[in-house]
Image (cartoon, rainbow, N blue to C red; front, side, top):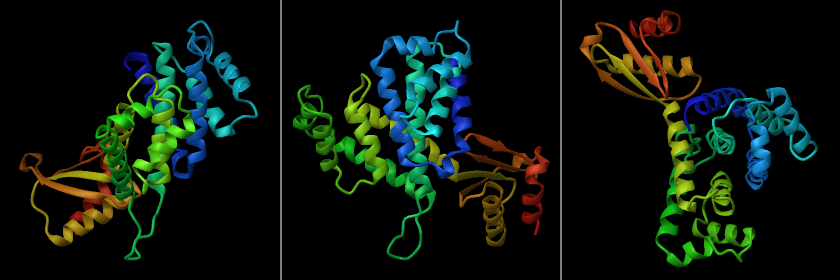
Length: 280
């Protein structure tokens, strides 16, 4: 996906972000169900990506299509997608798949699961667990030609394929099962494991939001590292893993990368408090 489609997807992901803290698996499943409808009708895809139609007209078409069948949140997400511009009709479906997958990943990220020690699993740990479960599934499929044939058997029903897939990873989370089922019943022209790899890559990319790569001009002592951790957690509103690198060329500045966002000493409004904390 490139050009105007890439820009539309970036915008859609930004709009989705505000709703992710309270997102549910049912929302993701609704989005996947709408994706199945889009994939089943080339005429519908053309109508929703027709540049001669206004965004409002395309949003209205989506509203009529899903009225009474999905939640208002799902309808709004797909309506905004349809109103955007797309270079190719398939790009709309690919974007919807990405948004639905992102919702699933966010649900895993938001989940605070209890462990034996009584502590909770961080968002980073939850995402790593999701990625590992997806990887385990691909390994199980790749290791068995019989399973590979069964997953593409045209006579087998969707439920039977999903049940087989779940037996391969019996300890998988509900989030992993939603993604595995999607890859099994609607691979969208890809091999199941290739689609799972795409999902895992999206989970890996989201993990970067929990890792702060910090560059400073001189080594920090334990107290400074603690203040750095506390300041960054406050700045980003979550418990980050902080990796510190020393680069004397930055001459007293601080550079922070979290995911795709880079903050350096030129952004004084955001780093002012952090730099005061580091100074003690």
